[in-house]
Image 1 (cartoon, rainbow, N blue to C red):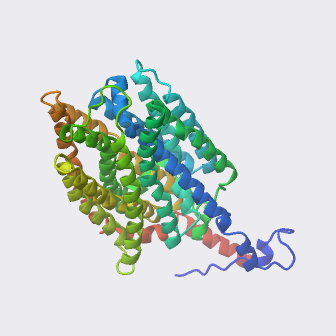
Image 2: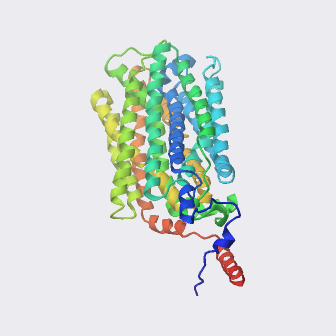
Image 3: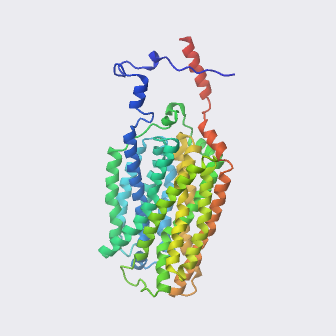
Length: 494
């Protein structure tokens, strides 16, 4: 019942003139890793990818850092303010499958370079929007999603093709540090540039210049690795299936589907807080501390600065602690990853609730609870990405990333900022400072309950994670066994 697959003879596998005299097989393997990328080049590749990831999130939340100025400049309400984030996420979400399909089939470095270059140009153009054309700002923010869609679906798969096992988890943790750090820097840079220049438009002109630097680094530092080669399954043995076949396989993967729904809850909460937390803290200060309201720009952006600092610190602690707790817990159970994700969401829910409730009583307590809530919320960033990469085979990973992006944003942060804004507008009984604060406070309480639901999805993921991981590890395309048997017969005849 078993067929022994013998390795090919060295005389058949070597190409004339392909090696230096005296170089043995082990030496050649050391000189050229399976991925085709040297260890030093791999490290520099991860650094460049982290830098670009940081820029993506920095640009996304620069708008949130100067939101009071934007509302005053264009004369818009909460519902229209929420559209700024929603339009960007929708564009990003719908383009992700396109880039996921391309990323599984074509040169990933070139796709990212074009996308990031386009994003830089459009972001710069958005900073010159006249006050009579708010729709034009919405359009340019939507086009910015092209750059992030071209990057977010592809970059994790490059890291997956450079590293395996614990090393991969470590590098993904470094990569996802850029999310909270970049988000926090968006608030910080946005608020400080606004203060220094006295004009919020300049806040949107910082990341485009850095984006062009990122394109140069992509072209000259990053090298395209071989898909799946580092996992001892070179590309030619992992046959690509059609996009429809990929989607059917992903939908039959319980761990992937359930963890995606869990991550959707994370996206809903982070999307809501990212846009509305600084504005909420500003309104709380106006209502409780007598701070002057924003009647004419530039507005007071100190809350954006403080929230940005909290986001950076809590994000670093959250991602690092999540990865470390998961690493230690794996020694006890193979279900560690989804359990840590569930723990993070379930612990963040009560602290976020307390932060929103205490905003009218104690600003210090509010910032403390926000810090704790964001720390626990950040525990799952790198772990969710790692789950996807080890329960999905290499030739479907970009498609899986795209599918997860679409679903998590469609039901998460694509609509949550707009939804929070619309609910806030509907709850206002008068246009007083009291109801500007109170209505947004009641609307944001939704986030705590969504976090609990996300924790439940990750607990369900833990029931299937072992089986799905083994299935992906032992995956063999249909017909591969027959090909191996035919290869063995040919070698025997020789």
